[in-house]
Amino acid sequence: MTQDQRLLHYLAENKQIDPLTSWKELGIYRLSSCVHRLRKEGWGIKTGRKEIINSHGEKCVVALYNFSYPPFLDALNGCKYDDIKGVIDFNSVTVLLKALKHRERKS
Image 1 (cartoon, rainbow, N blue to C red):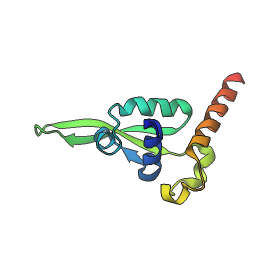
Image 2: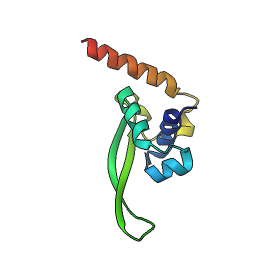
Image 3: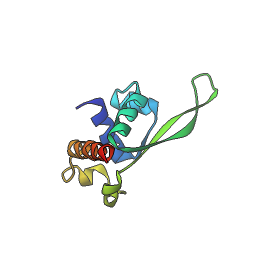
Image 4: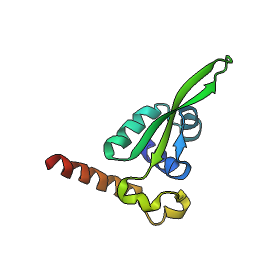
């Protein structure tokens, strides 16, 4: 499984992720790079901000990425990944999103 696939599956189940969680749970160091690639494929990932306290006791702000299904999958919104993993194949959806984006560019 690629980093992008791991991230997509994680977001489908948990709806959001920050860089530290990405590193600890998914082994993804450059989270923003994965998010960028998934956005280019058409996945709805929005960037928010999360305030944290670093190891020196200072307030810091990090990215908090929030997931939303593509418009044609809105009916799945609110579902847990376990509920849909046997029904929906994220790789197939990714291929479909690429095809739709290609079709839009031609129009």
